[in-house]
Image (cartoon, rainbow, N blue to C red; front, side, top):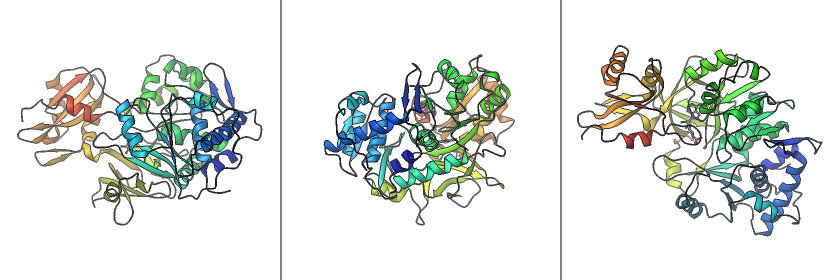
Length: 468
Ligand code: AMP
């Protein structure tokens, strides 16, 4: 076996080709046998179109089993998979295509498979080394140009094997899959864990709390972003009984509110397992399967991953080195150099600390750090206090341009209340320079597809609050 990730994944597919791989919500089942044979046929089509190892295969399609088949076929022939968010507009897509120069660009997975019918299947995957490129994942990039993180077969395989073990996957599991597959969470984390046990996935085109509730009846594991869990909690039919049979709920891609963690525990008796990852390294830390999972902590680094806090203080930017960490940004050598230390650690841009037990606690993105009157303010510290106030469901703290302070600490909160009273409540718990100067009330916060609050949009929206 070479280091081609397809060889590893397909070596774990069940021997019985009739075993289900995808169970769709319309009742249709796509078997492992079909996944394997169609991946071979699609590989045949890609090759006949001139795709050679190292070429990029770009895809902007609806979530479907066919899209996953194209992913597997791309790995199989040693080409480089390049998934694009469905929400990208034509001009955004034009940038990615210009930057990555894919050999093929697929916009309809079903049509691509139909067009592959009758091609000569490729039965033997193209051998790959662990250092060969498997995928390019463009970061969501809220500032500047989006960067393409280059992930190798070795990066993906090492992370998949570590997670499969850390989360105790076995042949008896059934994974509920409601995540998008243009992002590492749904594409690598979820799919690879399932493939490594050859288990069925209950396959949802998107998150819908009613459908997910139905699907959970047949599942043992669910992976989600925090908004999945808060939406489930908002559904009164989501009860302890409805999930009594579940083994594990995993959460990540954005911070899980401690209140959601506690509400989930109270409602279901299950403790959400929070983990932390990013496009450049897939999963970095996880709470333990056995042992205590703490609200607000993202747990321990995965085995084999070195994690340290840069800058010499207790709290600082998290730096990582290990087998899953990417080695470069596509065609951006200067950016790559900037974001690695001289001794080879990737500077994640996330600010955090480790407690005496070694657990990692994240306090936000470095670029969200507020400098007000010369003092550093970490938004998370203020958000945690606001979230405890009556009438507040969730908060996002940002710095806005201010004539005296440079930046003024301000908060945007989901909920309602009296601004002056809330500011006074903060003053009893926080040093004056950390107290929000303004609090804005909203019904919802802007989020991207992975549930991350887009603070850049909030900074734009409220940018002229103080005349500078
Ligand atoms: P992406 O590359 O789009 O997956 O975004 C990665 C970023 O998401 C990380 O750098 C973190 O800022 C954030 N993130 C992911 N998981 C968590 C988590 N469990 N808690 C807090 N932030 C997270």
